Amino acid sequence: MLQQKFDQHFYSINTEQYDWIRNPFATNAINSMEPLPLQMREEFTDLNNDMTLKLYFPEVPLDVFWIYVKIEYPHISYKAILTLLPFSTTYLCEQSFSTLVLIKNDKRSYSKDLDQELPVALSNIEPNIKLLCSLKQAQISH
Image (cartoon, rainbow, N blue to C red):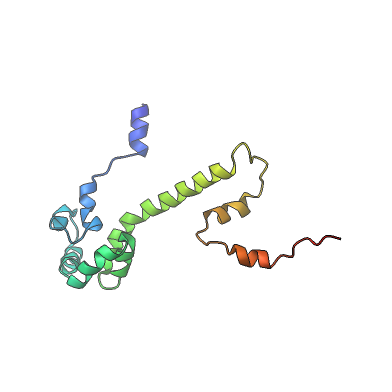
């Protein structure tokens, strides 16, 4: 029963069918595609033969590439983005949970302002410590 529940929630996927997303310029990419409508296959063939995009592909992350080609190849790009989206959102969710575990450990269990601490901990913005310190006045002795 445990194995059935595990298989139900964590099903395995055939990653070979997504080789065309990972590298649309590979020689076997078109063969790895699942049966797609003719319009999407034509878009993919055009994209596969676009030398400008072939040079651009290794220079950017995968998600940036598929968003970049969205205007010229909307259908195939949409399919690729829908496939990639769950991985990034799952990663962000796991990252948030790990940060929450660090914040709410047994040494800091008194912390009640998670709604303020969690966004700061998850932010990619580097604080400008010098500016923040210059805005505060040091305590003056009397």
